[in-house]
Image (cartoon, rainbow, N blue to C red):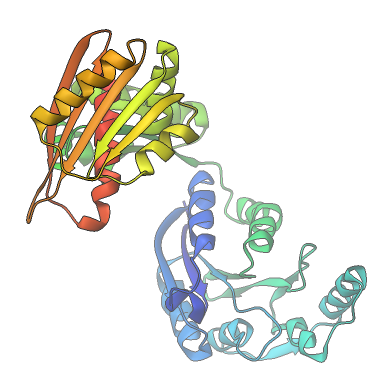
Length: 381
């Protein structure tokens, strides 16, 4: 199986002005194609540094994909960088220039002389027409690797990769394997506890098992490399069943499931409206539930801090006023090193309660508290 590296080019990426969504897209695409991705790099608009990065990458990888730096301006250095890496010069390609002119004619405006730069590619490279933009792509063999340069505009990059590059790679490397990932979502259990329960599975080589922690939830990714989707699924299934057996109700969903959607479905099944009382919290939990389609009878927000006893008392009063509703009461109490979260739920005259603690970054406190509350709801309704 071939290996690949991705080099995302653009000073604006290094400065944090825009996000590098291209690498994320390519990482998923090459994974699905069964290509091993071992490294991705961000680099600014400097031809020499890009050339050095390409030379380093071809020592390790069969395929190197660059994104960005193919525009018409002086600070679009990828063409020159690839030529430097290949120890060759740039050459003008009339057919690429004709394609660019044709594209501008369809746009109803003339091409500038600057756009002519985009028709220059390294000597010996193969040009790739860009039917959805003005920047042609190209690829070139350097030593034993293939270097592919794609535009940085996401829509153009995605189109060219899917329709031109992926078929090229499938043919060149006789790709027949794929990498399939299946994700189990866990809430109400910390990362160390999950690792304690399934640590032995994390030592598997194929399929592999990995953990990704979020505030208030954990993702367990099971990834299999196989010759077909059916084979990969058959490899993943017994591992997923083992994880499910060990973690039980702590698993709330798989793949595209979200904690909000799972809770919303359960609340809708009860066919009851919800009354929410919060203290020490913002409005994000209410907003999340509304977006998921939960019918809220009323929401109350207390500015003053409520302790466990007061929270219980107010929830009972709300239940008496709204006997046919589910009452959800939540109070977040700030602390120097640790915040305490009191959660209560009144359903069919039965009171459920819990207390949870958080000692992480204040930046993640809201996400953690919302996920903890959602986890409490799904476990008790």
